[in-house]
Length: 202
Image (cartoon, rainbow, N blue to C red):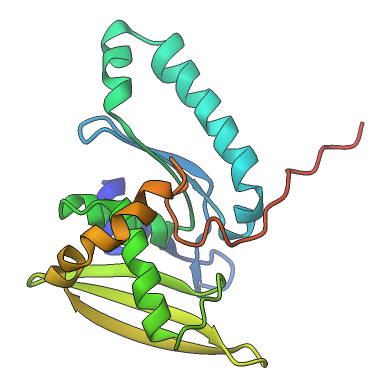
């Protein structure tokens, strides 16, 4: 049920109990699918700067629950799980959509670099976002929000790309895909600032 809600976009939108207005939800949750072997930490977008600390905590949690304090059969499954850390439900949805269509999400992120370069006239601002919205009729549908100009003007585009274009540039972008973080599979990851989670006062 949760998977279907994420893919439909329902999970990301809820009505405010006070005013009834539709709001975008930024959850913190662990998405697990034992049938498909998916293990994805989902955090609010504003927590992205703490991604390396969060990733370390999640990896510790995975080892504890899937390798150490678990049944032998679960331990045998653990090496086959796809483990990811994403920030925002659209990126969780994108992972599920990519895997549903047998797309390598690492290759997809490397391909986004090509698309962002073209769609933003070479301005590779890491604040830009590009998300796979749909896969239809052998085409990849992306939604792009970029930042351009010194005034920080936002531009929005929807781009349809033939799946064959991804295949054609696979050889060129594979080295980029191979260098992406093991679990934070996002083209912006090396470009965005990061910091440690603030320690609580004693």
